[in-house]
Length: 116
Image (cartoon, rainbow, N blue to C red; front, top):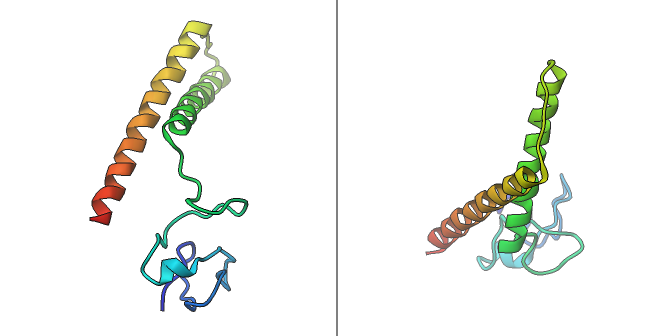
């Protein structure tokens, strides 16, 4: 019997959702075709929620800005100070975007190697 990719509970091949956690399941994943570990987006059919290069760049850039702000707020909380100008913010966003693209390339290479 296959296992739910979310909670690892054994489920029937005919099940459309996991009886324990409610995670959506696809019949093709149980038949050997498709990816049983794919993250399903309830509002979309198809490939799930895998970001493309533009999405990876945007998420990486925003993630880098958010990380900087969180660290800056911690520094301010202990009595320090924080300053960044618009040029620094843009540079930080671009660096985060490049990191996002690198992570996406590594992820895609891992998927290609796994599928061989």
